[in-house]
Length: 71
Image (cartoon, rainbow, N blue to C red; front, side):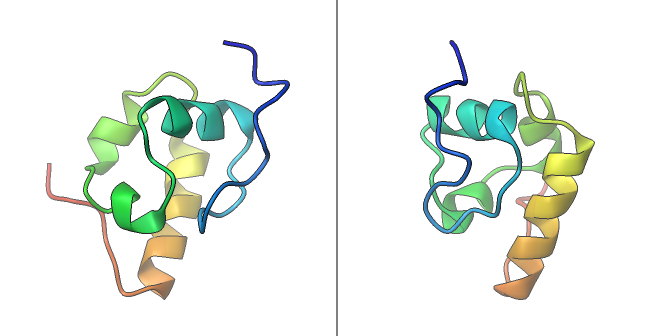
């Protein structure tokens, strides 16, 4: 899947880069609440989602009083 037409940011997700955004979109994840239902390990297993993107998501989750699901 080309990331050229993927928006840089979707829903209430922070900007995490087009490859990571594309991976989340493919998994049907468009909100921080949906991110919170996944573990850090699960997100890192997605092609295009790296440690930097997960760290950005973790900070955004913490700001909303949310956290990743347990592994």
